[in-house]
Image 1 (tube, rainbow over the protein chains, first blue to last red):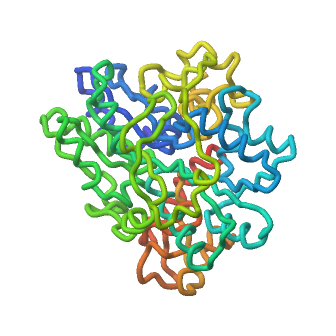
Image 2 (spheres, chains in turn cyan, purple):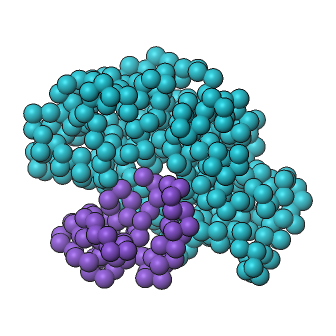
Image 3 (cartoon, one colour):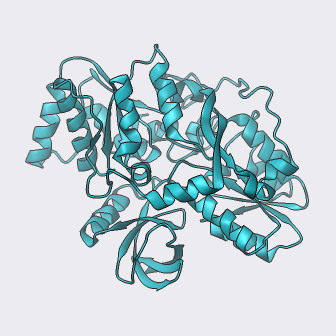
Amino acid sequence: MKKDDEQLKKKLDYINSYENSINIMEVCGTHTVAISKFGFREVLNKNINLITGPGCPVCVTPAVFIDYIYKLSLNTDIIIATYGDMIRVPGSKPSISLENAKARGAEIKIVYSSMDALKLAMENKNKKVVFLGIGFETTTPATAIAIKEALKLKVDNFYVFSMHKIMEPAMRALLQDESLKIDAFLCPGHVATVLGKKGFEFLQEYNCLGVIAGFSEEDIINGLYEIIDSTMKKDFDTKNAYKRVVEDDGNLLSREIINEVFTVKDDYWRGLGKIPNSGLGLKEKYNRFDIEQLYPLDIKDEDTYNGCQCGEVLKGKMKPNECKLFGTVCSPENPVGPCMVSGEGGCAAYYRYHL
Amino acid sequence: MCLGIPLKLIEVNDAEAIGELNGIKRKIRIDLVKGVKAGDYVMVHAGFAIEIMKEEQAKEAIEILKELEGVL
């Protein structure tokens, strides 16, 4: 912590002057890492409970999706194009991962962008290139544009497996869980660049405070300061503590492109189960790019139990280091669950900074 | 995947642009930000600019990136 900065120190003292207990959940992987890295849990009083929520898209991907992708990747006419984060995520068994599929001869290519996946399809006309579409509102427009380009350029061997999710229904589900008692959300700054402050105003229906925050130490202190200050004043209006980047209306163009290509569907979240209207599938016009049209995904049991308690961690019911596998059976070198795999996962952040 | 990277635009061609950070150049898409030109700073997620930034904001974001470097 930059304790030398007087103004920040005053704000921290103010936050710590709050005497009641308060549960604050962050729902962004970058916030998870920043909170651990800057040591906020050590600096804040114990009554200010910072909870890691389901903000890492890799972490909320259910095992059954990984099993499906694994099986898909073993087809000799398929190339899987994916962001690097997905490579080591285990499915229902530790042996089921894209890394292991690659060792078995599957063609798995790491791409930096959806457009790289489209390019790969254009260069490999004799194969089906399946791009793993994953993420919230910051990465969904990128997948949408690649699909629109594929239609325009008539690339008929480009496919998408859409695991894109919407944060609002998950936040609503968490708020409806009476065992959780979330008082405030530290809202994700980058998702908010797309959704705007207005995209989080639904929290007001629950008398739950939402404060949009950035990612520096100062940004997070400002966000927490705003949460405590508004809580003391019983003011539950959604706030924006990241005004230099986030606008009230967000990025309309991004939302239009998402709505043009995707349609809302029920979706599965690791640990949270099936949440109505929380995922995005391709609209009928773009069906031909949907890999599920060729290889239907059959969901019987969305979660299989292997001792991993990522689900409880993602719901904020358990701190990562309270899981019995943490640091013993499960570590970043040998991850059992996705929260330990992703650099943005709560377990990986705890392992790095709190062990 | 989720961490935004601030880049300075060096070249702009229709929906594509070349962005630069610390001397490393990268081809990006600018479909989601209207009216950007060379010299502007943008926040890039997964190869797409999602927000235009002021120079001062971008430099600050680069500092944050350095602080979190090696983690994400």
